[in-house]
Image (cartoon, rainbow, N blue to C red; front, top):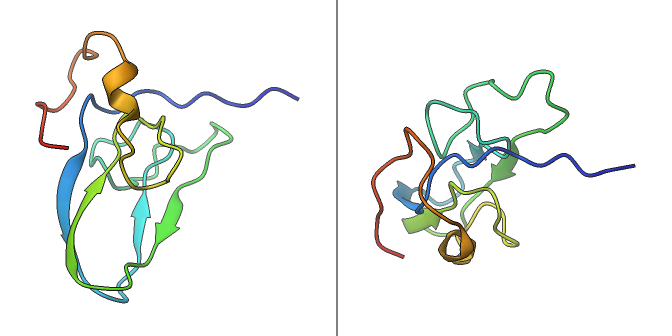
Length: 94
């Protein structure tokens, strides 16, 4: 069985202030128009969003390239990608 490859949702992580104990749903398919969060666009893809519940309130850098090995956190995988896909959000800080 082959693994489903998600679309690239962006070329840089998005900094998001998250609250301790408040679960968010990270887009794992790359199709969401509300990156880095799920908007239901994964329907029919075989991919599912990832629940993330922070253990402390702070700014987290959430992956948009969907190639991270630390879902949903950025691990720098976007640096290995080529040019940014059309419509990708502007580059941000790692």
